Each structure stands twice: as structure tokens, then as C-alpha cells.
Image 1 (cartoon, rainbow, N blue to C red):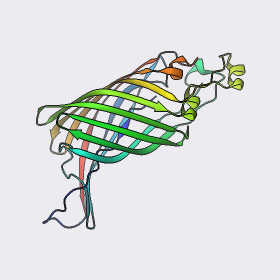
Image 2 (image 1 turned 90 degrees about the vertical axis):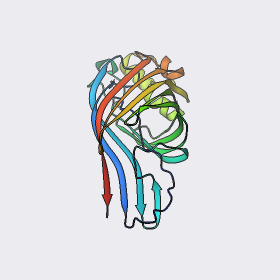
Image 3 (image 1 turned 30 degrees about the vertical axis):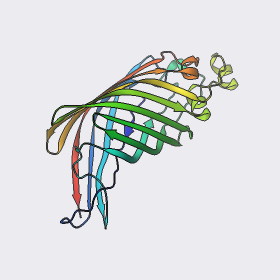
Length: 251
């Protein structure tokens, strides 16, 4: 039930509009369905709801950030928010984990820095688990960006995820007590690269306020994450498909 990474759109300073007044917020919100691994290292997949959100623009008082056109091509340095939800992992749902501690849902919050140029976009994100693992996890990526037509954008590029000691131990470690209860060998997982892979993204503009999105991602667990006794498959694949709507609020 590992949800796809959800990254807020670039937040870039915008020049003040000479003619527009009042407050304004532009964002995209949508959802669909995703096929994802049941948990990190699971050989099974599940169909789960998929939520999508991106911030495009805000004008509040005398300050402006972003671009009122959510489909505008990003350029230069940008800063934004990064978040992810990793659902709970329980032996009730996965009998092969009997004897191991149940893991509660983790909500990760943090920020990202991005840089976009002609035909590419790179980002680095750092998040902290405010619930669940309460540890640091980072991710870097580089995408080639292709726009074969004005209303279609395609992205493709590598991803690398890094986890701290606490993060690795939370998802891949086996304590002595768990080993005794489950019959699985005890295992100490340390900080390092958790996974490396490649991600594909697609967004097609159906109408002025509506878009169809799709993602596909392949990750291969690395290091202690791959060596853990509870990693039954180190190849993890997720795909999603959904629709977003652009909201333009003026007040």
C-alpha cells in the first residue's frame, strides 16, 4: 500500500501584476486509482485510491508566488513543499509478517529545491515522518521533459531514495523480540540508499480546467533494504491514473 510520492509544484516568485487586485489562489486537486506494492519489499500489489495535489499560484496582499497558469513551463530555481503518505503495515493484512510489530501510517512532510531548464527538471527533497517512522528520508530525481504537443507533457527520469538509521530500522529491521516471536532472523538495518529506479509521468489537458494524469515507477531496493529478511521482492512497481481539476479562487 505504498502510495506514490506527491510533490507540490514549484513555488517561484512572480512579478506583481499591474492590473489585477485582490487575493487569488490557483491549485490543482484530483484523484484516481493506483496499483502499488503492499508494503516495502512486498511481492503483492494492491489497488488503492490515489490523490493528487499541486500548488500553482498565490497572490495575498502585496505578495505573489508562482504562476497563475498551472500548465506554464517551469524555469530556473524553485522551492516548494514535499510530502508522502505511507500506509500502515499489519500482520492482519499480510500473514507472512506474523510476529512482527505492526507499523502505523506515516505522514512525511518537508521541502524541496528544484531547477528547470530547456527540456529537463531536477529536484532534491527532504522529508520527516511527523507520524509513523519519525525519521528523515530524502529523494533526488532528474527528468527529461518532452512536450510533443501543447496540451501534453511527458517526463522520464531516475529516482534515488535515501533513509536515515531510524527510517531503515523502522521498515526493514528485525528486533530480537520480533525474531523470537516470528522465527525470522534478527536484522539491523542502517542508513543508506533505500531504492533506485526510474519514473514516468504524463499529463494531458482535456479542457481548460481538467487534466488526465498517469504515472509509472520502477524501484529496486538497495543495501540493507534489499537484504532484509522481510524483503520478499526487491523490485517494486507502481502505476496510477487519475483526473485533476484546476481551482482558481479569488477573494
